[in-house]
Length: 510
Image (tube, one colour):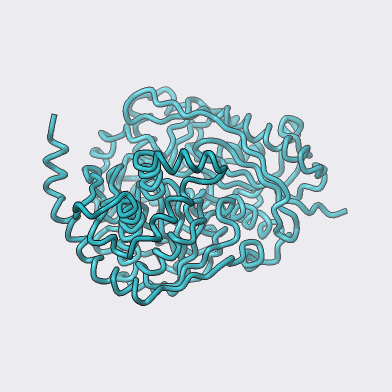
């Protein structure tokens, strides 16, 4: 019997999700194994790669036990993983220190040092990203500056998924999507940037080889096969970064298609045949998991987090009633929102509880309700929150539109995409149909499985994703509500601009 199942691992921030897909693209089983993040100092965020390995081994074995699928029926193992980290590995693929993950921003001095050797503009034009301590390069240089012995002993600096792949196969590789989140990858040539490497004095030998996301980098080594719970020689496909895999899982595979992920944070991303360099540096671009494709993207910090804050701080009564009735408090809140007209009678919410990324790029921005009057109720506040988050996401969408990207519909995934009310608000504010997909929260692992299946030939091509993740519902704009939002959207932007100097004054307070 020919092996017909794919194990896809999604090495996230809170844990590893192991999923099993069959030859028809159906999800057969899913197991989650958590691990911790250490915040030893302000701005630091580290994880132990040994915990990733433990999570992969245990979740693999539990997944096969739970589903009753034989290890001889595993056609390949593939990966998605958290991006923008720095994992220092020796020649045996063992970690030399804890991994500095994407959320770590300690490398401010290294960011400044890099900026003195390569300009902001040149960095953006090469790699499609701003220079930032959030990316891998500054983190690698922090290790060089502060732990020179570890730096000298490091064979390769890799990402989370690449560290596991190296341990499984003995091959040190990455893929374009993960490489493009390092401030080291040239989107134009699709290789490591010689210009950046020379500028910072980083030897090319410290970086892994870049392989296509669908590449079978090797087979599971005999000395680790039993520990993992699979047969020796099982093919391992490199896969992609979690954002790129989510893009594939959302079915965004052709130029002009786009999706909106709504979780605690949120992003809008599309697909393009060429890198998208915004003249105002508002958005950024990753490499896609599809060969020679790219992912322009803009990310906001507090999307679902704003709605969660409103639930926790303003909806005590709804939470109590919902608990009694065995339902979600959000269902009750949505029913209240539905009683309020679009525009919340002149009440605005600025969703900057955590500062803001693209396209504002303002860490000092803060949240606010503006326009409160005596007639406003909690229901108005709730509606204003959803409208404010969605108008802020439209700022990202409009940045893409000014770059010449024509987006005719928006796919939505993530836990926040479940509510039809919010879908309708999105349709009305974006002015395009919203396509809510049938699989909302497994899109990342599904994208990894898609890449793996195509890589080994189990799936004929990427188009199978249309069957794996179908459109569950299409929500079209309501013309009257859309007209209201067209009037108030410019006011929303004016409010932010007016408050920028106030935010600076707040940041300067003791």
